[in-house]
Length: 318
Image (cartoon, rainbow, N blue to C red; front, side):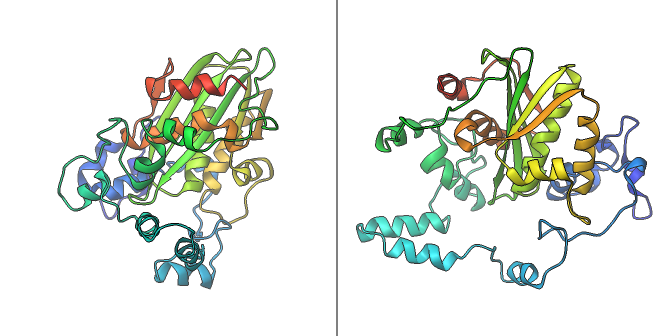
């Protein structure tokens, strides 16, 4: 296997031939391979790029931050905000524990080998990370809605229907820092807001930016397979939209994937990619989060799943 080229592990259809190497590599390596599109001869030669920078270019700063296991955010600023918060010491300590991801969730119990599954015991739908337990669990969401009253008089529409004859695909990506894995999801609806199709896909080991790009690629492939003639893709990642429309810097870790996206988009006479706010992308966000609990194969939902039915109803009220 050491002397074999990458193209020897690709099937006739151009996908990874998992059966030829999956038994030879550990699962974390397979998860990394899963989020990499197999190479093709018509996409040009391989090239080097720096994965820690969006531009693909090496910087001393990103290398330094990686070495000291810090990201580019100023964590000191967060700690100061927590300890200056006008509340009790007990709540400050709880917030500090959340920021350190040290709350004993199912995910943490599984890391310590106390249990064999990290699925949330309240909803049985996803891994119980800190964010899931405190914010994202369907059993917790109603509590936050009652506690946090949002102004709605000047709010923008939650979802804007496309013109008749068009299909709108809202997509999103999700990254789990604890497992360093990502997933994506999306929902296709017509001009009446009718659910046409939804998908969720656990991509593998990658970052949030890759997840957003994969969401676009997955939606395009589905739309092409279904022969939809007029398609709108809406993403809440402005950078992904910009790189698709204007091209990405060279070298770039995802240059190959963006070229495939643009190539597939060129097969349509009518296709649009737009940027949307998070307020109009909640349903896609729920599907993307659900992808973490799935296998590496894409899951298609011909009907709205129960775990996001309430979001779907609210989303179409505008």
